[in-house]
Length: 139
Length: 161
Image (cartoon, rainbow over all chains, first blue to last red; front, side, top):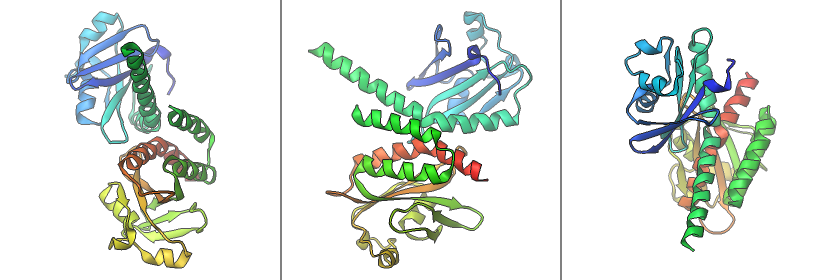
């Protein structure tokens, strides 16, 4: 699976009903309701989602394309589970030159699992960091 | 923060371990230091033969048990971590293993290790906390740790074929 960096999105569940995501180049930040779009659908069903014709998928949110100016053709997503077996994030890849296939889905499932512990750890780091900052402010 | 940095550093080392004989001892050493345990075994599920085996079980050698035996077997079956501070009072505990090895188990935590298909691929077991009993903090730490290392175990098992 070869990727251009621009084509990777990762989405975090922040609060109960909001998902926030970043394009991998870090320029754009997207926040969507947790039950919207193919990412929201992935959170809900806890399974990978693959579509090679995004605009015909009933869950696809075309507003995101409109606001970013990016044209999505195909999408593959995979839930990322925490050690407590809750979905903490969704990994999404866009626009493979040819279509996404079952092999890609298998790879996404394996890869999401492989990185899940690192992501969970960085999340703990982030929260520890925020705690430290809070202490500084309070003093 | 130190402990978090240690885990991150360990993660870097683990990523370089490409075979199971390197990966398992690394993981076991880190698990022991995380919760101050005396021993650690990692049981791998053999679905074909309905067995659990461990290549690395320091001081004891190789152990093969059936998937339904002992607290480890129960962890496999229920897919839930187990914290047992009085194993000799627990009817699931296999006293025969202690008798054979000459080791006395004082307390134990077992945690299921899941693969990317969310099936149990193995069980992480730590024995005998240096002082005190194991507590819920140890359990939380090992639950996190089991997930942290699970992708690497899945990968090295793929290499094994």
